[in-house]
Image 1 (cartoon, rainbow, N blue to C red):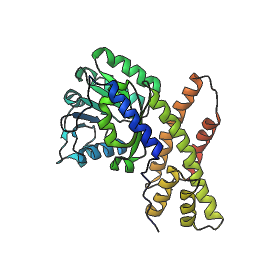
Image 2: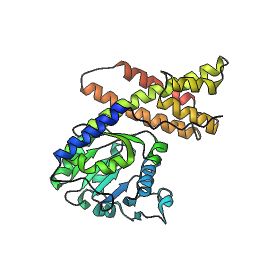
Image 3: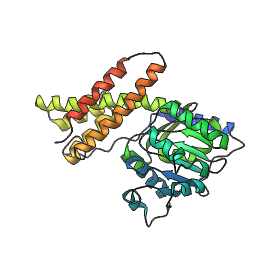
Image 4: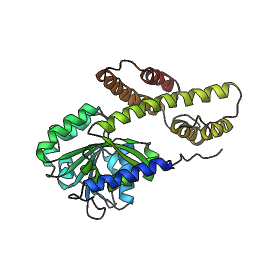
Length: 320
């Protein structure tokens, strides 16, 4: 069977939009030039599937990273390499010009910043915190409000594309925050992604990511159900995937899970806990999106209903 490598091409109009926006941002930020890979000190906290993949790629690209994780298993891949591994999160914060956080949810981000061993008071004045987790837009605004009096800027830059793309520096990042601050961070963000766009003020990146994940959940459920239906009707699944991927039904969800079936012989590349984890993350994000709909007075939209129903479908494909 053929091996699928998810496509990395970005439409020309998006590349043009991104390059145009970078020019505008850089003009707005004359007093604070973009960071340089050779001199910037980057802290990274949260070395799970996504964060670890991003950090690994940045190290390969020659960035100077300072790392912390509570679990030795998360740090083990980086030992013996060029990254500096520190014993305390506060030590990472003190060393960093820019600190990236990529943990699971709002509570974990808040704990990293402001908990009993929080790093906020260890950050240097004029440091930037980049929140790469997917959390509530209001949480980003609240955290930024607490950090601003200390002279610390915040960018919300949740990442999209999965760990495999993270390892290739081929993510998509929608940013919220001050244009000048984002311009300063742009070389670091561009090292992680094929598309980086500022979409508004702080919290805007998170809002767009929540919409993205709701659409992804719906696409994933449809891709899984299409596979089951095609098999039941006697179609050749490899041929069906090739046609769907190349035609108007193509999506990242279809690419990813066609790849999993061909490589692992199953929809998810691990035990049931993997599928449950995927569904749990999506359910969390769909719940956050529903809260944003309520705040906007939009009630229950079609995308909300479809995304919520998708979770049950995804779980039905969990391996025994």
